[in-house]
Image (cartoon, rainbow, N blue to C red; front, side):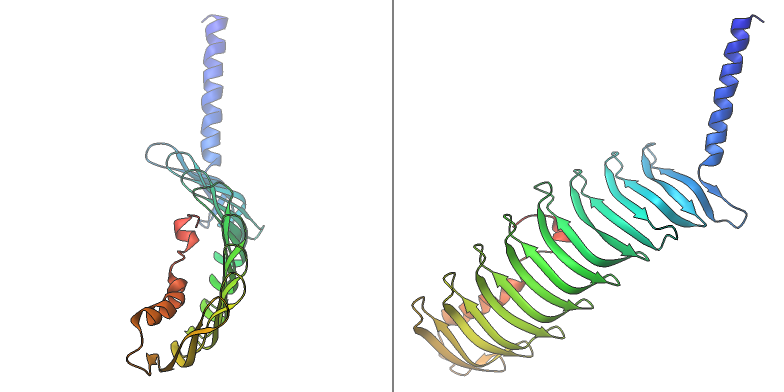
Length: 262
């Protein structure tokens, strides 16, 4: 065998051995069946599904997941014991979708959510505890002006709820108690003059409600008992007008699910 052929055979053997050693180093479990070291999983088409490191069956350090077309899906950086992770999640188009922190796989602290249409556009922020909104949920217009603020306790609306005009002035303010509208309701024109005032009790309009003109004069007044107008001859338009403001709470879709801007 010539020296040239011998060197080629030795090189091929060395490369094969190194590849074998690398394969052994990947996706390793110890004698107790716990994941250890560098792990890579792939889709049927051969593209990487995820890659990261484990210590005693817990993720440790940087951990990446990918869409099947190789675009990064999430980047998590775990604490040494694997219980906490700083997370950045991405849309299929590669834009950042959200960022925040997990504690034991549950959302915790402040999370930010971004548009899938305009790269980097912040559309909402929410405070979490044990994977439930706990604190303020804040939504923004495209120019970063606050559009809405809602207070939550363990995932349930509880406390103040405010919505703002695009220019930043207060549109309306009311409050929740354990998931139900309770207390005073006030709506305002963009110039700050009152537009509607009234009262809620257990999700229903109660007592005297007023609708005002922009000059401050009373345009309309009616009494409600358990959500029903006392005057059955009340103008339908005026009733629908009051109801339309209440229904604004369902017009803003969850940005975590849609990613779309206003």
